[in-house]
Image (cartoon, rainbow over all chains, first blue to last red; front, top):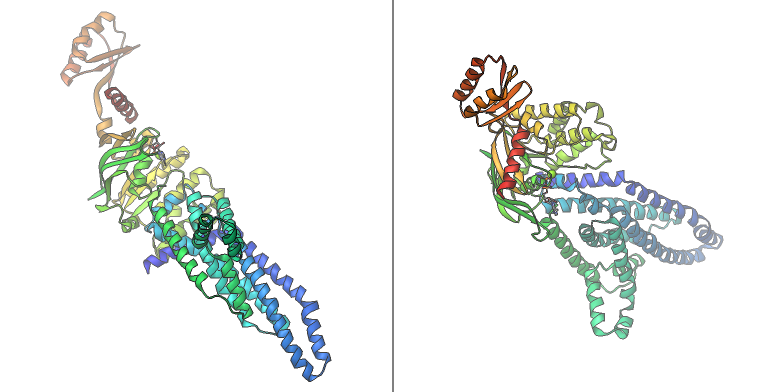
Length: 280
Length: 306
Ligand SMILES: Nc1ncnc2c1ncn2[C@@H]1O[C@H](COP(=O)(O)OP(=O)(O)O)[C@@H](O)[C@H]1O
Ligand SMILES: [Mg+2]
């Protein structure tokens, strides 16, 4: 109990830091802008138009049209879930949390932290959880809020959309293992952001084009890229699973999720190992 | 009980090229104010950081309150004011005390109580709700001191506690420290300001280039030596020559003679000799060596011996 309260004390301080640095507020505002956008954009064309049509024709037609409408909404919502929820959510979460590990390590600050009765592993995990709590709250607001607006506007309460929430959270937890390691080694927010985006770019370019790379590149280089693919978070695959879950489509299974989970756990363990041996 | 005990502590940086600490064996009794002295770069900060687990020793070991330093539970009994500390500057003074005490698992009611008490002690009551961004260096230093005491520690480690603090602030800090000592607690402080250390420390150790070259009480370093200043009326050269056999060292400035003697008998002989020659003796003052003078002397000797 005492131990948890110490770790959570650092999580709370981390949360306080993101409030002070305005990253939390800006994330929140951008999500709100996103909501307002849906509120306005959806109003005119898609929904009202479709419903107007439904209401003009007779009973039979109305049931048929309603089915079409539902399908259309599912397609639209799965795109929204991936582009705004998944991509947008991860995009902003990276900015909102990239500075946290480097700022923990700042001279004059880290010395006091280490002098407290917490092991270095506990400190690192407290920081990690702090970053995740900032992300989780914002993701719930971003995706949950847009779901509410879409549902109220269309009258269709499509619950599969909400799969995007755990999927984005888990994907970002994986991504943050990489970011925490880079932040620890480089002590630089800029470098952390650059590496995070490079990893996403790599995932987005390599994953859907594996066959082409295999055909084009020498085996050595291909397997080198393949191993990088397994070390880094598999963001593209996670996005694809999200799209499939929300759209109710079949997908290749959960391999990407659990292999990413293993890679992220190893990476976190490596970070804690490095942090525990470092001189400050 | 020993508050601190180090065995052959050695720390090298840059693959052994920089020796920050070399074979330091030092023990500090509980209940005293201990001053670690030494010029800049002597290794004082390195020693404290090793003891608190911020740096890892290249070799050697250390104990705090007779427990090995890698046992993190002992840190519940430790307070630390680092050199050049930087608390998150978006926090208010009161928040700094609160958040950092939570890291030491200090319960809410005790936190509130200590916060009020310590803010008063370091004279920052009016500043509790101001962001520390706006604090002066001296205020930050006092807040750091309060932070270090929030968990009711048994040992306080202070790295240059009066750095950047004006003379009045320094006096206030000294009072806080003496108050802390009265409760039977131990203070370990690093300083290159000797006059300060002289005023409050019971024991001192001197580090130079990573080596411990002296560990003794402040009294031993500043005890009255066998040097006296004798204020007289005019003394002639021949008369002075007559004093020579009784002294180890002698120096004359205007109307005073400074003599270093082997014993009281020699001093008496000198005074008798002067009186016999009708010299007025206006005063005899034992010359107390300041810590600074001893310090410089010890460091000089250290260089010569090398
Ligand atoms: N992280 C480090 N890397 C390399 N050298 C260091 C490091 N920290 C301290 N030193 C060196 O170790 C020596 C002792 O430093 P320090 O303990 O800070 O001295 P003091 O506190 O007595 O002024 C200095 O020569 C300093 O340059
Ligand atoms: Mg120092």
